[in-house]
Image (cartoon, rainbow, N blue to C red; front, side, top):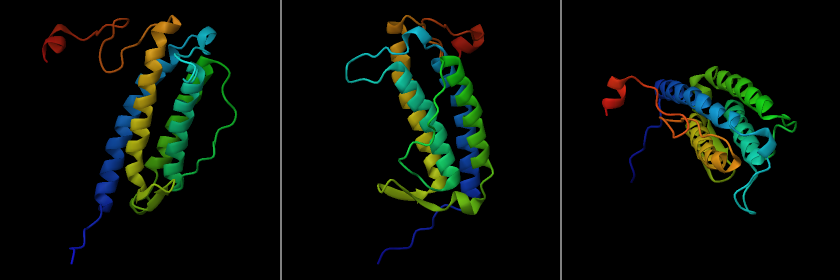
Amino acid sequence: MATPQQGPTPEFAMAYREVMLMGLTNELNATKKVLAAIPDARRDYKHDPNSRTAWELAWHLASADVQMLDETADRKFAMETRFKDEPKTIAELVSWYETNYLRAIERVRAMSPEELLTPVDFYGAFTLPVVFYLAFVNNHSIHHRGQLATYLRPMGSKCPSIYGGSHDEPWQGTPAESNAA
């Protein structure tokens, strides 16, 4: 007979949430830089006929991240698109993303330990305590931000630094920091 396994504790759920929200807040800044680098005049660019346009990818990244954060707070995931009114320009998209992302993060931050530990079905694939879906938001954002970053130079834009310098935005750390590795 199998030994019963203890699930995550309320204290773990609260600590995990705070670690994830710190990371998600840091990722927001890098994502905003990539979104902002999309030239409005080239938003219909795509690498391949089977690819999304830069705009489609940018809107998916922004809207799905916010939707998943809201769904975490709601403790219910739905495939239905939540946000129907897309921003019109890249600048409006960046502003919409920041405002709604931070709003949704605060909704998650307000959740009680019991709410964070609520088992929630994820589109019929599996059921986990809802706090663990914060990692999905993180991975989703990083995945699509990386895709979008590969569009920038072919669109005539520059690739911003994300986790360190890029050719277009070199590392600006102090000499001691750049030699520390």
